[in-house]
Amino acid sequence: MDALDSAVKEIRETLPGLPLSEEEPMAKHSSFRIGGPVRAFAVPEDVTSFSRITHILKKHKLMPMVVGNCTNILFPDEGLKDLFIISTERMTRMFLLDDSRIYAEAGVSLSKLASFSCQHSLAGLEFASGIPGTVGGGVLMNAGAYGGEMKDVVESVVSYYLPEQKLYETPLENCGFGYRKSAFQTMAGCAIVSAVFRLEKGDRDEIAAKMKELNERRREKQPLDLPSAGSAFKRPEGYFAAKLIEECGLKGYTTGGAMVSEKHAGFVVNTGNACSHDVYDLMMHVRNTVWQMKGIELVPEIVILPPDYKLTDDSPSAPLHIISGSGPLSEADFSGAKE
Ligand SMILES: Cc1cc2nc3c(=O)[nH]c(=O)nc-3n(C[C@H](O)[C@H](O)[C@H](O)COP(=O)(O)OP(=O)(O)OC[C@H]3O[C@@H](n4cnc5c(N)ncnc54)[C@H](O)[C@@H]3O)c2cc1C
Image (cartoon, rainbow, N blue to C red; front, side, top):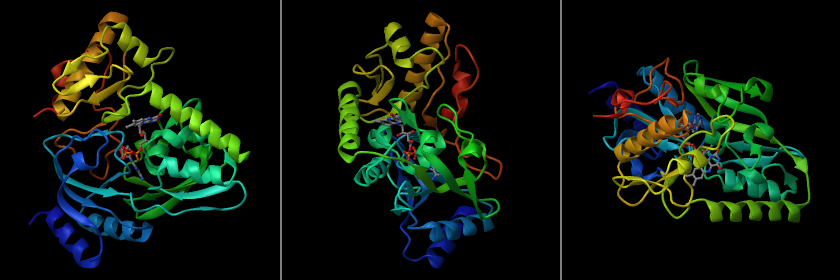
């Protein structure tokens, strides 16, 4: 029996009602509909059971990966045999703190947060209503759209620091927010458990109309009928990734079941039977072509997990740069992601 077996056994005995599955296929959870089995997948209902799970894992010298709606992750087909995943999908408490602030747990979906805000005539979260992620994933990635970002509305974030088993409250000024980044990405073992949002008093009908307009724009421009993980690459400074990709003639380019969307060249979509390697190969081809033709480096926005991925005490919480370095890529750049 290895450490993971022992930890799973102890967690089952300590928390008998906890949904905890083994060999859980990640294709079931990922918005890409891609990904083999993860060794263990637990879904705690609140911060208390979350912390009890992590306490047992720590005892066995294990570190879990925390996920939200899995709308920004490419899981490997080979599966993740050394990984314990904790999903925040049941940590969904949300309430008003006063007339301009909302408290939301990590698993609250950004669309529910935006609707709740609208119901209470609070403006500022309209941009988030069509982003399919959660509060936790959104804060970690500083998710944004149509000129708004999480950093514009977050007042503070509560995170659970796994190595110390302690909760920390981080005010906005210490969150290290930048374009699709936050300080939480580089803090090993840092799980976001909740956030407080500060919003402006507004007119409920105007807020609802703005949300409707942005969602219509999204439906018109984005390939929402096919599985994806949103924009495949970050916006390079001074350019738009989708425009560069389109100018390189890559719209509709396919590798196996993965395709550069014909509707929006910034998206890589799963046309039905894509495997994770199709997506890696396609992203590598796009990145190389854009580098060769335009001299501009595209950096992935999607979190790409290699098959041997596991977390240790000094791992970053989000492995955002599995693809690293400037310029054309070689197979070696993907060595961690290949068999
Ligand atoms: C159709 C589509 C449209 C999209 N549009 C946009 C858009 O307009 N703007 C945008 O910014 N993004 C967009 N995305 C990408 C994605 O929805 C966002 O990045 C979102 O914030 C990810 O949230 P999540 O809960 O799904 O995170 P996940 O995909 O589950 O996780 C992403 C990363 O965050 C980490 N993480 C998740 N929760 C926690 C937590 N509680 N504590 C610590 N780490 C955590 C994970 O370990 C992982 O490293 C889109 C995706 C899709 C599929």
